[in-house]
Image 1 (cartoon, helix red, strand yellow):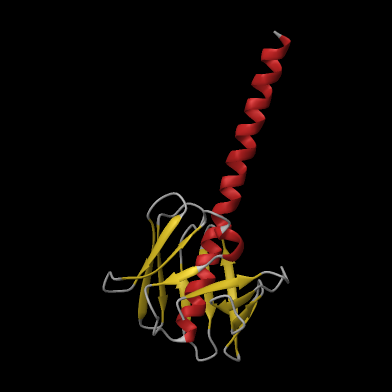
Image 2 (image 1 turned 30 degrees about the horizontal axis):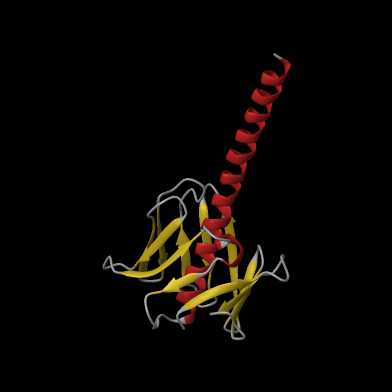
Length: 168
């Protein structure tokens, strides 16, 4: 598998796909996920971070302010991954050795499909792939709200300036 993407036909339970499908890796809701036949417990707070509890007791933990952080450190069992914001909407994922293993972007409808592209054919376990894909989607969705707020604020200020220029 070279990348993962999300099918958002059911907006309350997006489906994680291997590439563009039809292979389903998991189905995620706000509170839980079904990945490879196992149910995970999920918790996400934009300002405090993300946590997924796997049935075998391992925890995917990424404590960070997802709306502002430029680096997000995530651990899953003994493995550590770092999400690094390279530019406004472009991110890379590094492993514990500092090697780039994946990338994703919010540009060009990136939030809608939240594609996590791996460096070549990945040999990561399905739990790691699903966890990283979920975190990438959470990063992009958290940033979308901030970008929308800035855009709305800018448009409101420009509208006031245009009205004042027209009146005077």
